[in-house]
Length: 259
Length: 287
Ligand SMILES: Nc1ncnc2c1ncn2[C@@H]1O[C@H](COP(=O)(O)OP(=O)(O)O)[C@@H](O)[C@H]1O
Ligand SMILES: [Mg+2]
Image 1 (tube, chains in turn yellow, red):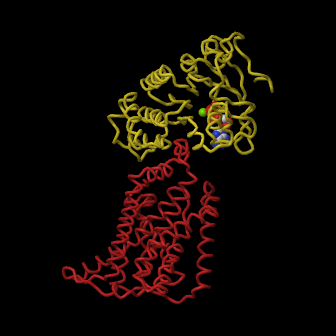
Image 2: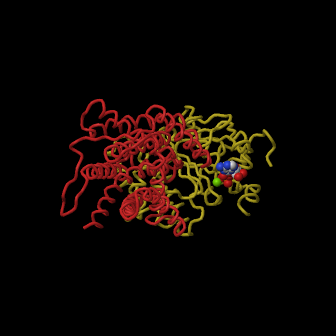
Image 3: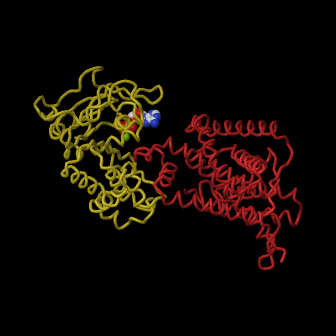
């Protein structure tokens, strides 16, 4: 266990672990504590993501990875600490207000609106888009990224396979034109070919310049496409570093990569 | 032909029931609150229509949009002050709260308006029409038509408009709706207002078809439960079919036995269906 109050260890002291030299973070957590009822889950969790970066949070089950994302989205209010987006505090805002600021979130468990069609699900993703004339072009863009969704636009989401539902959940988040996307375990429980597809699509988003915060149990795969990673343990920062450095680090390998 | 006459009459009645049940369903779908005070909202709509007619002497149908708008606003106030506090709490909390509201509203109404039965008798809406050998009550026909239009409009609103879809999305998964940028607190507020307005409109129709007093809320909530048990909780189309079924069953019972007994029909149907098919006849929950 990490020593209480200790700073997260950098696995390499060189520049890789430090944020890119240019500019301020797009999204930043500063010493965030968060609790479910009386049980404190996050203990001074801190992280920063810069524009265009792909950052992974890894760690054992129950470490608080999902809780970090929920705190960012305002689903859970931090008891102390600050969450900044684009330099402004979003701590304590409602989820819908946070979405309007430009943060997209794909929750764990490929949750879609089951009784709505694919197109209606995407329309809900664009709820914050004021100019409804832009919904169609946005939807068409999602269909070029996920052609399968285009073929099934009138199908009820609940009747699709798990992999297709995950594609829909990913497509839905793009409809709001977010500046950063948070994804919680997008490959969890999917068939192998869909796991490949999910990571392929994440790679495409990265290529397109999207800023991503990724939570994955598939730590090796996730770190290999990430610029940087954070290892979370019992709600505390444990290690941090560049994707390749974390992948190469003995302690991280032993504890989290099954190597 | 007598039987056909009775069935048509029952179907017409079912339209008003459908409107009541649809509002109850909407509120449950979005808030997971079973509104035991729904019958009292209907009762208030009936009295509002009665007083409108009593003071102005104008066509009581003109009261409907006014009463609906007032109850839309009143419902939102009620939601903010009371219902919102039990959202997400155990079902028992909301049952006790709405039971209390129901009793309170009935008590206040009894105090103000006594147990005397009232009705709205507007000459042009009385009497019957002869259609194809059937004799159809004019007020029932008008009430049915209005109930159908309002239910239909609500259905189209929920299916087609962005706000309607946001309401359905919230009913299906509030947390995900929220992270689509939907203000689910506002959705709950508007949904309760809509449900209240639908109940009040049903009340306006009840005022022109039946006699009523402050205690009819209890009678109608019983009918609404029977309908929802028939149709499946949360299913708009199922509830509509359930409402027509109940209307016909009641009318048949009244025709072949006695009016007193027909009051018990709703409960008999409810118990019967729950014994045979606990999930309801016409629908699985869908929104
Ligand atoms: N809704 C909740 N209520 C209470 N405890 C919760 C809730 N969600 C998660 N927890 C607890 O918080 C801890 C962290 O959970 P989570 O953030 O989901 O972990 P991870 O995503 O890293 O697996 C776990 O101990 C879990 O049991
Ligand atoms: Mg998790």
